[in-house]
Every structure is written in C-alpha cells, then in structure tokens.
Image (cartoon, rainbow, N blue to C red; front, side, top):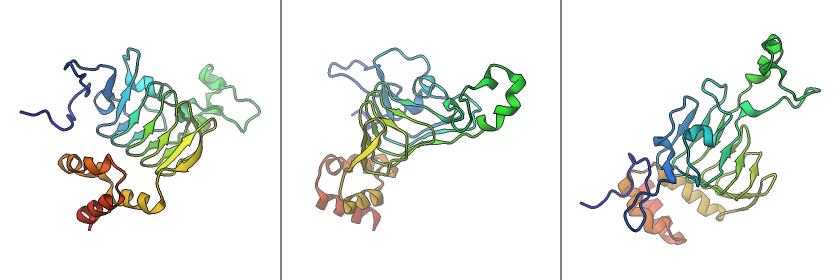
Length: 221
C-alpha cells in the first residue's frame, strides 16, 4: 500500500532516503497544546537543536491565559530560529519608563494591569515561508503566500504574496503580478481536500499561468 500523500497524524513527517525518520522537523499542530496558539494542518517547523516544548520555542513570551493569541495558517514552512515575539513581551513605550515594575512588585500591578491586558493577536496566513532566525513582532499580520527572509525583523503587517526582508522588515517586491495573486486567492488551494491538492501539485510546483487559470476555472467556477 503506498504511503499517504501527506500524513496529518505524523509528529515527524519527513523520512530520509534510507527510510529513517528525520526528527528535526515536526508538524506544529501535532506537537503544540497551548490555549493561546492555533496552528493549521501541515505547517512544519525545523529546529537543529532538541526541543522539549515547541510552543515555548517558537513563542517564548506567550503564556497560557495571556490576552493575545498566535494564529498560524495551513502549510506554513518555518525554519530554525523562527520566533514569534507576542504582545506579552512588549513594554509601554509611551510612558516615561519602559521598565515593567508590576511583574516584580504586585503592589503596583494596578498601574500596569491595563497595559499588560492590551494583547494584540499575531496572525500568520497560509503557505507562508519564514526563513532562518526571522522574528515576527507583536500584533503583526502576515498574509497568505508571504516569504520572510532569513534574519528579518517583521514589525508591520505584510500583504499577501509579498517578499519581506531586512531589519526592520520591509516589502521588497510582490511575488507575482496582481492578476496571478488574484488567481491564487481564488484558488485558496490550502482549503481543498488533500486529493485535490495532490492533483494540483504539478501546477502548484510550476510557473504555468495558463495551467493555473485552467485549474481555477475548473475548481472555482
């Protein structure tokens, strides 16, 4: 019996040519149980070092019960060192001091409580590739199909189908012409059944616009 196209139940979805399981890569949805983190199917994370707690590794400041959430779409590709710096890591920037006295002395927590409660969700779209050691800062929304360059510090929202790089991260280009982006938005292939996605792989793994148009017409007409 052939192996499934993608095994949603796997913890480590990659096998090396010799058949051994490659344990550096995980489906995040199968290794994270955190009330403030939502991960779509088939989003993977790769880490060169041993990991005991994947939630803490990728979102080290996000505690259960925090006012913000980390929402991650399907089919994401996150390289070693990807970090989501969520709102709980933030400090008041409009006060005369940024020092968080309230976490060390609960006697002044009433002053800090309203600031600490201002959590902003971080939202990552579908089919997003985040390069090595990139950091996504609090409250950022990254659209579908975005590529985040290695080492980028993303401080602002990123529109779908863009490439963002640098510190601070800036959009350096759109990945495709607007008409192609619109076709991909209509296709939304990540929401299709797995058998449809498998059939689409020859088109998805190409730059054949005519074939893309034909598939969108077939599936979304």
